[in-house]
Length: 131
Image (cartoon, rainbow, N blue to C red):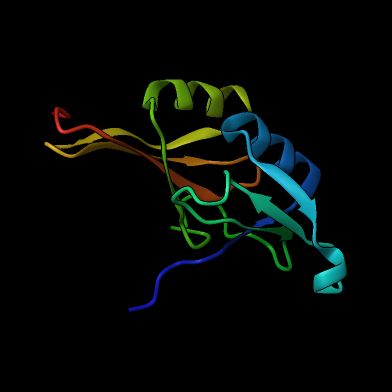
């Protein structure tokens, strides 16, 4: 079996995207351009040794699909401890709701958002009481 070990976010405005993800999720960024040979930011999503993966952020190489044209990227979902608090931070940072909070009955809360670059991502809070 293959597991996801890295993700990449393409952005029209890299600095704006960095500000969004730092504000919404507390992510940190490291300049990996010297490794990639092009501007490339490593995305640090949490401490080593905890579940989760890190990724990369780079300048979008082509025009993003327009709204209403379906998914525009590999959609990654972030596990969160408090769905409503996270949604508040996403919206305050400039994100938009793509699909509202939905109960995955008996399992979790799930929803989808658009970041400041129009990329789709999800958030997921485990909750066996979700209805």
